[in-house]
Image 1 (spheres, one colour):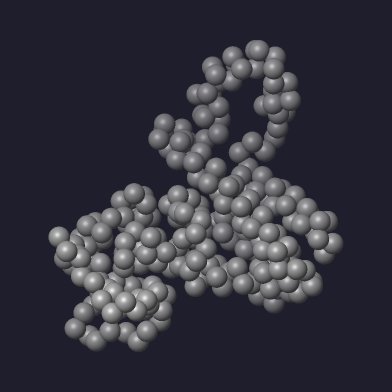
Image 2 (cartoon, helix red, strand yellow):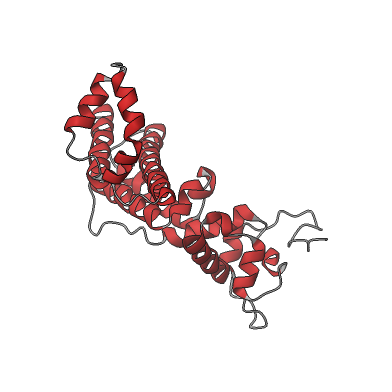
Amino acid sequence: MAVAKKEGEESGVEAPSLWERMERPAPAPRTSLTLERIAAAAVEIADEEGGAAVTMRRLATKLGVAPMAAYRHVNGKDDLWALMIDRVSRELAAPEGATDWREVMRSYAVQTRELMLAHPWMAAMPTAVIMLTPSRMEVAERGLSALAAHGLDADSVMAALRAVTSFVHGSAQTEIALREYQERHGWTSGDETRQALAPQMRYLMSTGRYPTFEQYALSAARKDDRAWEFAFGLDCVLDGIAQRLGI
């Protein structure tokens, strides 16, 4: 089936980007399908059914339009993902009155973790899609400017922001994967999970090769406190940035 050509394709002129099209004046009332409606519907599907459920056909059904209608607005899955990420990332607010770089970065990190836990499909999104949207760029701009205010070079500023971002995304992805694994097996707590995995753990510990891990298993008091673990790890990252960059 032939797909309708996007604006500019026939003339050889570069077509306007997704975000340029989104900021243009609203189309005439003859159509009710907009990028905002597409984004909202896609996020609802992903939240309720998982990211894999977001297809053009499923989206068309939810919006009550023909299967090919959405292609007049988005070029494919990358555009759709970008719209979804941009929509939910509007929830990432700047800390009121914050000027200290640590306060700005901590707020960004904590809010991003909460956002990913609320929308677990984000954990599977390509990094390039996650970063290159207006809402994500606004968030990045806040972090970059807070660091740049200390007179750091551009490479150091970006590397520091990416270090925090990598920690947040890696931590949240691990947390989401564990939660989904537990749900798939019907385990409702950390104790149930450990009990189910006890045979494997007992064998591994019996080899005597993992004494430090065994000490953790026997004495750790915060095994299921993901928020504390995240905050502690984040402090380690921020402390490292402060010492490395002298800020």
